[in-house]
Image (cartoon, rainbow, N blue to C red; front, side):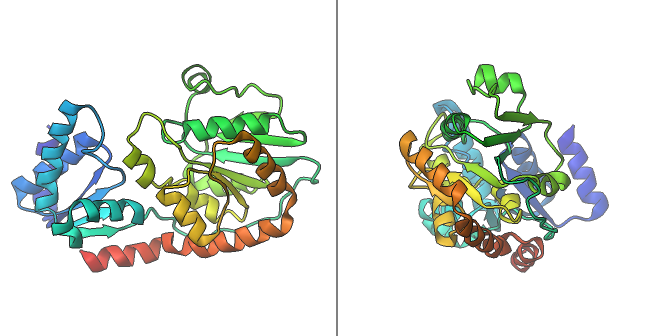
Length: 302
């Protein structure tokens, strides 16, 4: 039914090109089938790896779908340079098709001074908690829970019961505050209420090692333009760690050591000069995600 509706839209609007996105396999396959049946120029946009995930039976099916799509596509956009580099190495005969096209933001917004009196340092975590960042999030939360005069404010679409019972996160702490998730257009104004932002990226879990190496947490982008310093807990050998290191836009801890994590948190809280450097560098790093710049790149390749 959906495929028929897509075909009708193509004919009515006289569409010539289609950009098909992944990570949703169902719609990815629909888009590729529509391109094939309607003789459209196919472009792909990968946010995550595909055929490398899942069990052996699913992988065989995914490999066939991905191979066919890669062969027919004019361009294969990827969400990050990390994912782009991986695919270029895996598919050297078609490496010219791969183009990094990062997630974007529309405009820079007003940054306000921190409003609290400084007696309590307030961290904010915003975004999804799942297997992409669960282990690092758990460690970071455990350390913050033990700190005096430090609060953690959590905004996540994940239900509180899932956080507690499925992900085993102990968020019922006196210095933890779980808020209702906010719409994307209100994220910036919420971040202005806090002293610093947190970013976590999984050291491991249920995903493949390739996924942890290549995925880019898009929640980093609103943090970069928030005007607040960022504390990141990420594994040593992955693309997001390389990105942060190359741009010096977050304070990072790249080890599972709780002792090192604790010392780094305390040092970060007290180093105001470092905060200023990180915020300045974050704004500079954000330019590569600025919407008009990314659109120009997209249009030039179509």
